[in-house]
Image 1 (cartoon, rainbow, N blue to C red):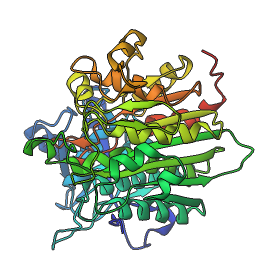
Image 2: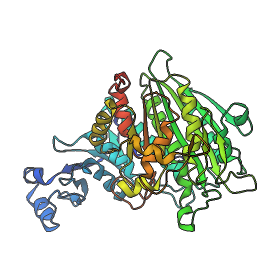
Image 3: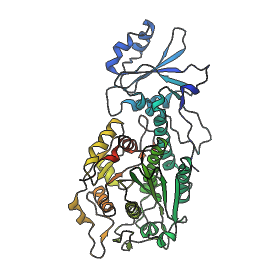
Image 4: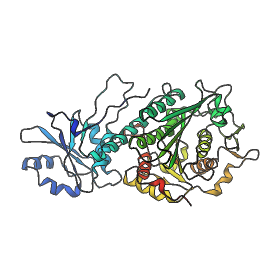
Length: 472
């Protein structure tokens, strides 16, 4: 069972009549002078003594003449890449209570500010004896309430799944999380488990997970009107990655509970699509296994069959995520989706190239690249396009199989994406190599499991992205 995170929002109509929320006024350096002129002389002196000018991250509890605090000031600064997400640092610091947005500059989005607020209230306290309720924001705009709440709830789901240790988030528990989500939205769910993977032709998923004490599986969720454009969302669900026979170091294995982060991202996107009733025929596929070491573990030098018919020489058992995804991607193509998106905590090379907060995006069509990138910047959920550089396919050549599963030390995120491309046929497809982890706390992003790129993709889908002509 997944951990339930307290809701950081309340609708205005649900607010108890006797409650008067504390106002949150959002200020930038450019708006501070005009805003300050609306304050009393005493409040101006109070703010001046504390050198409040609207710079990024500044917070000020502003007293009234009677000494009570009825207003809090939040400085956003001028950094557009953070902007409204700074409300997350405020909600993380404020005591439990009710709050409401007051004044804010025209360029500030109340919807994004509310999402930033909600993301900042997140706590993973499942294993803590002391728990606390978050500061609660009153939502006034009925048109955006569902989207705000579902964005924050989907992120909390993603973070909870990643943060839960493998002892409580193995293949069985991850399947159960998918079933709980499907039940919430009356979606259909099915699973192919253990030896049935061989009978139903998912040999790579089986090979990766056969050494673990919980059987590997492919879990599928189907939702939506069949007349709507079909979207396949695929997630890598390696619930713990020892590296297999090519075992990781102690430091490398330390946070490998997060290696199912791709599946968590896929479930989060599915959550947002279903909660907001987008006109999409959703097909979510989770390739779930634990990459363990036992007497029957797959080995370097082994050659695996695949659902698509290619043979794969195992160069490194720690390059397992692309194997389980290969079979899942192939299955997704068989239902002729309009578009496919996969999320995977796939390569350290992606983190070397772009760091932990900026996931690389690969796409075999040019049309969606700029659109998804633009939506990512607008939603403060940036992604960065990297090329499917075809000459690097030679790095995957094997003399005894169709290809090998590792391209060596150069361009690791590119060769991993090229490996996956072999399994999508000619279906329009986008791949995100996400870290799924925030190594240090920042506004709206506590340390630990985190979600990247999902809100960007959702915004693109909401704008009608699946109606794009995917011809090139």
